[in-house]
Image (tube, rainbow, N blue to C red; front, side, top):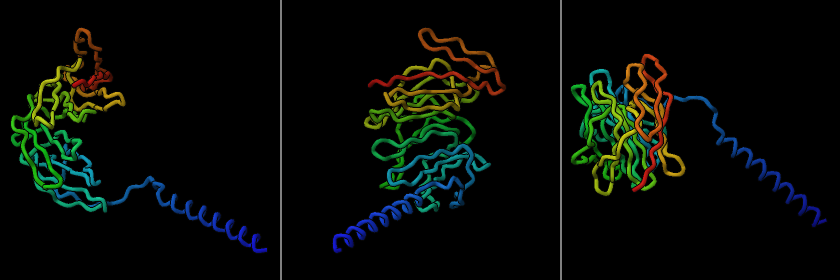
Length: 245
């Protein structure tokens, strides 16, 4: 009889644990709906955002309607938004990436006066301060893309300076705190997409070629790019960058 009672008790405990596990898992199922969060300190068009190691999100720059701003916000893990120390330079349409040591690199964009800038700066979330990358990028550019390579360096691609669309590449070395040239893409691009593949190469897709609907001449030995002829000269082609130290 005691064995039977113990067996029944064990069965009840197993069922109870299973029910609790189901209830807990339901709490983690995403609802697929949107909810209101805090309010940004400024309206922002052309801002950039990067996730800090502690889960907060650093939101930098943008244009509130009267020119680029240097203001910065932090989206906190509880859904609130708080002000962070402003950048050293006002900018919109810049790139921002998280370095492997947790700092944030912000580079390029449109600055005060409406021109593209080559300035770059780094945010230290522990010290809550900004520091300048002394010489900045090699080329002023807005609407570029950036990605952290597997070795910790940062690839910056394309962008725009005035009416000129760039096909150049740069690499930022966080150890040397400097940018260096890294060749060229097979065609000029701005406002394109970029992703690091699992094998370490970097895929670059689409963007604005700036060729007024005329496909760019293919670079010898490189894949050709094609424009779809739309008014924005959007590109359907892609190219791949192999990162080697």
